Amino acid sequence: MKPRAFIGLIPFALALAAWAILPLVVDYPSYMLPPLPEVWVHLGEIVGDGSLAGHIVRSLGRLALGFMLGVGLAVPLGIAIALNRHVADTLKPLLTFLQSIAGIAWVPLAIIWFGIGIGSVVFVIANTIFFATLYNTIVGVQAIPQALHRAVRSLGGRGAGLATVLILPGALVQLIVGFRTAMAYGWRALVAGEMIAGTNGLGYMTIEAVQWYRTETVLLGMIAIGLIWLAMDRLVFVPVERATVQRWGIVQR
Amino acid sequence: MAGSLAAPAVPLRRRLERPAKGALGILLFLLAWQVSVPLVGLEPYFYPAPSDVAAAFADLVRKGILPVYVIDSLERYAVGVAIGTFAGIVLGVLIGLSATASRLLSPTINFLFAIVEVAWIPIFVIWWGYGYKTILIALTYVVFFPVLYNTLVGVRTVPQPLINAVRVLGGSRRQVLANVVLPAALPSIITGLRVGAGFAFRGLIFAEIVAAKTGLGYLIFEGAQTQQTARTIVGMISVGLLWLLIDRFYLKPVERATVERWGLVIEADQRT
Image (cartoon, rainbow over all chains, first blue to last red; front, side):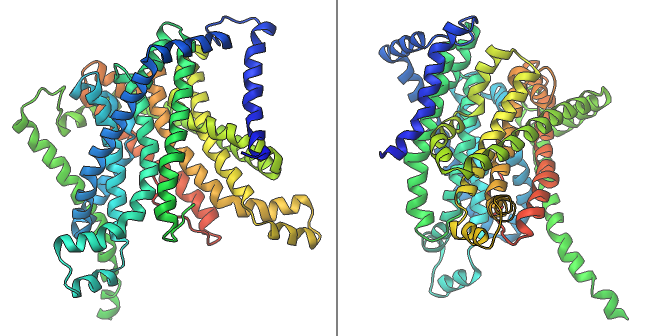
């Protein structure tokens, strides 16, 4: 952390200072923007009684479950579809369409099918990640040059061998690039799903507080949502991309 | 003579083969859905048939509800995206031109970009209530940050030798901006446009679920609330079609007119 990096903290400091001074200068109801000390005290409360950690753990658990379900179903199915050109041609427009129905648009239907609670939320995340991954798997597998197919086959590659030697590595770059986008949509779907259909989790915590005008909870929920996404992006997606996509010389950004 | 007539017939068939297969896929899907309904034997509100959905569609069109909702959604989307994109590009270029400003503001921009628009909607509701204002601000927000972020990245990564070369040859700052910085940053700006447009579309649906009394998001939510699930599915299909239209008539032409023309093709798999 050189002085160069610290300069980026100045706007945060200014924003906090403005927040602290604003109530002294302008008169507004405190539910619009609760005073800074109040938010700080409230942060101490929800950290102290473990409720914030509980919401965070539940949200992340759902995201992980939805991700595993979506990817676990989409990758094998995607490979199976992509290996046959006729099947791929037949299903691609349908999949493009299903993918373009925003994940959030599934929430009300999910409530009918799974009721309020974890089932609906996981369904919506898995759904979002499933269609994005399926599409990327098909595109990735189809992008493998025909010559490589022939080479592996003529050397006796069949079945599982073909899949592990050629197809998975060949499609991997496309898949990993796709994961980041899929997770960005999945994260939105999670927060939105918890707000509409949740009984706990960060999204629920944030929207529930609106009803009671507990604005300090709303603000803390937002900040937590932002920080967790930044942490996931910087600590998981960026290193994974660097270790795979960029190393193999297929930088896309 | 016969040869010259037969010649174009082959490519035409080839060209029609893929769309025909795609149409077949959709048809088979609808058929399987319709056939599965009596087999599953669930309540129509739980598992409506495609024929129910078609009836709900006809009903919504006849009553004039669907056209109004589509126009409301599109209008909110267009206004929000226009404001957010314009502000994002202008501010991104201005900030990007100064190294100090970039360093000063980048962490703030990253942080605000990370607070997804969905998370802003509760506080917007507290500040501005349920309605048009909240939706519009949320949409503008969600477009603004990806565009700003990518514009900034694009402007900051313009190779300095290019700028120096034009300066040495007597180019003014304005010429550098118009002929070097903007074209070089364009692929990145377009990426921001695409990401922003995709997030904004999802943000729109969510905002309409939470804070509107019209629009496709409201149709989807209201249908489910009143157990008119066929209406919900009409809404979902409209949402999918609308996104494909936005992709076809807004994003693709913009990409073609700018990036592809200058031979800087970016990958299209970031679609959604």
